[in-house]
Length: 444
Image 1 (cartoon, rainbow, N blue to C red):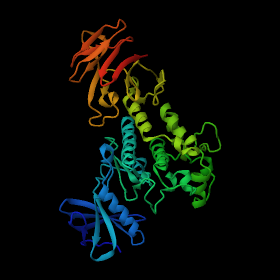
Image 2 (image 1 turned 45 degrees about the horizontal axis):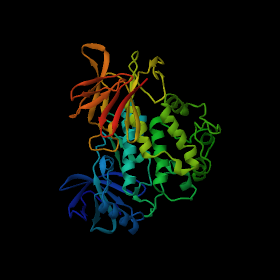
Image 3 (image 1 turned 120 degrees about the vertical axis):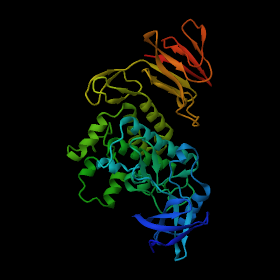
Image 4 (image 1 turned 135 degrees about the horizontal axis):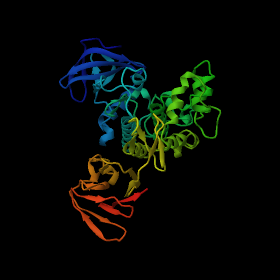
């Protein structure tokens, strides 16, 4: 039974009465309604009777009681707030969730249809980082998502902020059951083949497919094999995604290359300008990761890749296009005008989690997350900044924006103090101690 405009539904935990205002949309599991109550306008997903089983209700109650994951990543999930019932239909139920500002947060298909502007490259890095960060926090909380897909992702193309919706199929990893195995295009091959149930490990495959779609506007297995299929039915999907998945850019298997057809040109062009570090991660995900689920790229590795790409962008001096640098590249060709861009020297932040290279460019910021990646209290707080010496503009330095002095030593090992507000000149022999086990050196 569906709800009618003007119906009153009841929130179990808060005890609030909510008035149904209008129907927002309909999916395979139920209908979404705009409701209004003491907390203003919110949304109720009301299950069809065939979908609103006792096990589904128990799962939603568990999500409501346990709450969403902690951290910044957890805040991006549009989490179930309450169980909702109706005296007019005691056999059905729904759940309450926040109302999303759909004029700001959009799906990728709205971008592709040119109803909204594309995110620029820095924002695309942010969107990707936030997605990986959210699933990292979800998995740390002991949950698996089970149904990662483009339809569950909304983002602001201007700011890079992300929302993840339709969280009613989230469950406890390897413990709770679900009637939903996922969306076929995003399901791990072993789930398609009925060899494994959804888990955090299968989520990693779905996450990689989602990120590939964001960057390439294409599916990683849609190549010649998919092009030759004339009936896109369940057996066809089982073949492409489950029994015979082949990455379209597999360096060793040419059987599923992109056809020379208009519908595949965008993916080819976007892959051509994709940064090497990202190409490597996608290739690992869709070659070795298909055969060895334990080798899939983790959320933490995705975060490091996108953070480094975002923080090491370079502007072409000829056309102004933003280019992304990956470690190991000494000459960069502008993706837009093909002008050769010289790669400057870089400072390398040595912290407990490895090395973080940052290109030396006036105005480049050294952030808290570069110094201590594990501290997410204020990850984007500015710790230092690359500035020019006002007396000698040819000399660049790293300015101390903290409240504590740094210690710098050059080739002679003589240590000097760099007080807050002052700069340490960048020198090939320098070693700058930032405190908390972090230091900075120079590479060219």
